[in-house]
Length: 264
Image (tube, rainbow, N blue to C red; front, side):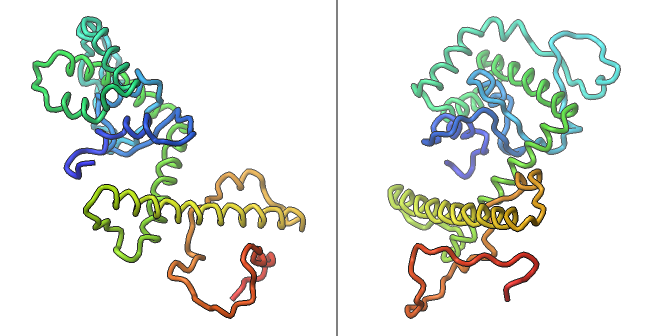
């Protein structure tokens, strides 16, 4: 990824080629992660794109036909050129199919479409389709508190994971200084392995703590369990304590703290 390019250029690459078993249906991002072209392509590829748009009040809506909406007139910035979309619809579908099958990468096409002059008809048609999808999303955003909460929670989860990775990468302050791409992949893979191990450790002990509280009739509210996160690391000594005479055998659980009593 080029540091001088917006995050939005690589959003679709990450959705299509994440090399995992996840079935992604909805994707959250911040303002830097969206453009009208991304809105159009994610819709065509079957993803629900849900960015948290900064300065939403200044973002204009686009409607298919020129008509009056008294409650929305201050937000409407123009009409969508549906005739242009119809004219280039086969080319738009061909572009989406090429990206879906991996014939061409979405980041490459988005960079080319963004660099084309305004006269390029395909880029304009895709932008018009993106404006229509962005308008639909903004209207859903304004009417759905659940969508706003879900998007905020998804972004917070991503930021918490990034914070954990930065905390683990304490030696070089998060800077990857390896020159070759292979060495960079080795270092990032190792970082992902360590963060995954911390998440797994936290998940196991959170589950045991919940079971202990439930067996003690401590009154655990099931509605609160969904708000727990295994991404914390404040209780983990990242630099380690090297005590070789510790009699504790590997593979044993550490004792849980008793409810109501804090461990020094």
